[in-house]
Length: 371
Length: 52
Image 1 (cartoon, one colour):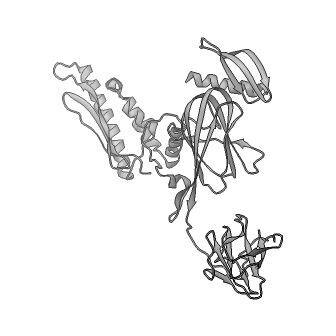
Image 2 (cartoon, chains in turn blue, green):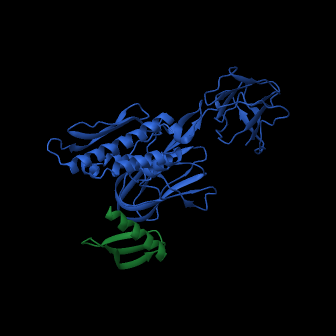
């Protein structure tokens, strides 16, 4: 409970002025506070009734001051709830006419100082667009809002774009399984409404509210109306995300969607026992052969699905040299001797095209690829 | 709030000519639904946005 505190509270009565000074220190070290005055106190020539009134006013202020000092003596800090602070700030000179407003506010502060729960609630209400005076700490880093731990960093995974010029159009639809959060920017001149949806099965979609960066609290629903541009974000607790036009009247909407992920790990754990490192079955392609000559030629096409490859030089006397995505040179790089095999492994894996050259014409290479 | 002056459908899209309260001219909106409740929801949303 160290959000706001009184560090000084006193009355400063004198012959001409009634005043109460209230000040404190914010969490960031800055000072706040002010002085509330009643105005000139009648002195010379005052009637007995007036003097009695002033005496009563001074007594009330002193009573309030004593209450604050007692509070400060019992507790290092005195937190102030926002509405109490507002009440203090709104005190005017006329409030001292009866000496009840200040006393009431001070009594409220003393009787029910702010708790962390009430301050947190007020902070939430502020984020939702409700105005409360007061000071709140701001989580000003993406890492904090994402719950990124020490040792982890936020990394841009991909940049995507979309556009819409009519109703029912999908602006963008993405697999966000690898992302931690989405940053969705809308630009253009348009008059349309759009809806954001998310899904785990890419078939059944549910509304997906997003938060507005430039207008916090304005996009708490899944639907963004009108012609608003800006950046909206959401954490990805789902696999798929999309934005669609639900109603259109005019214009073109342009969208840029950035997917951010969390990189790095925070701990390691030893593994014992039998561990399967290749956790999937692979499928052998149809066996094939290719006759390689004495000039560089294509042997195996590029294959992004390739998981394995075995090449066998079936010739009894001639050699075959290989090259990955480059011109093959005899006896350079990988050279398969007559009757020998070459197997692609995790240290020589490549999905690029393979070229070959042989030491003699019509050197047949047997090919077995796996996907 | 609003008055629909014309309404037609093209597939799953409903085209409405609507005059919102406070506007002088009607607007044509293409709404990605043929459900009346959804159409009302969209037009209400648009109207509320206009009031901001």
